[in-house]
Image (spheres, rainbow, N blue to C red):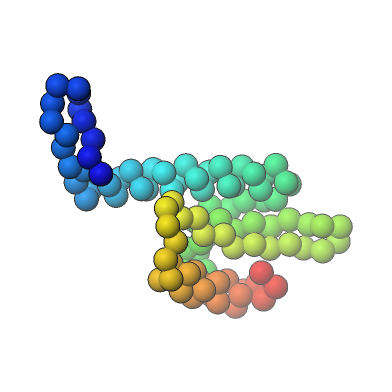
Length: 102
């Protein structure tokens, strides 16, 4: 991706560090929006909860009548690849050890 510092200069190429910071910022912003949506739905939201040393972006607890509802959510900015899904399934298995009905 090229970006320009001003209209008179030539475009410069984004460094991997800049790209990483941008993806982190975009991902965190997306995660905050998702968390706020669930808060509006009356869920309790925990950011970055650890399960057996694995961090889940959002862990949600709520109720529907007398039924507890638990959710583990992983937020990704950009395209989700097969390795992302595999990593999430590993995390989900760790969550299920503590909360089988998540």
